[in-house]
Picture 1 (cartoon, rainbow, N blue to C red):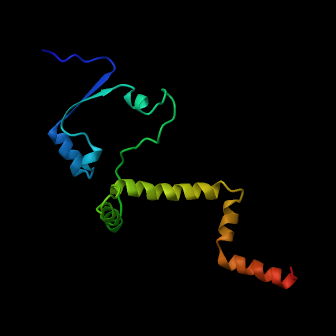
Picture 2: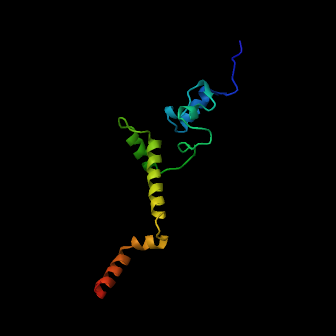
Picture 3: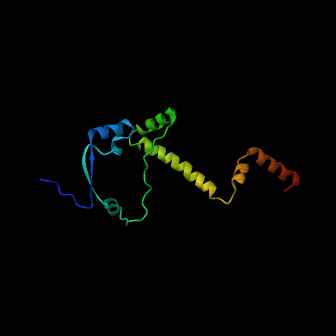
Length: 137
């Protein structure tokens, strides 16, 4: 008997080879589909999260290949091995997001990049302080 597939259903068949290939590429077990047939309902994610089509949701994850220094990767893997710790990829993403948001905050100020650079230059600050002292301000 042939399995009935509805138009809104999406069927994904994952082979053992595809599963093992993903694990060999460094993905964690909870990041890949296990071997077998998986049925997804079109629009199911939106319905579960109370969103309408076109409505913004959380940023999408994008699969990339990236070269990291071995010590950096090992650091995050060691952190991930701790009890109740987030997976290492999640921790790396969080660290990168913190850098991105810090840079966005800095660039959203009304100061030009040159002003930001001068304010970070201790020699410039000392020279300004000396000028202020010399003028008695």
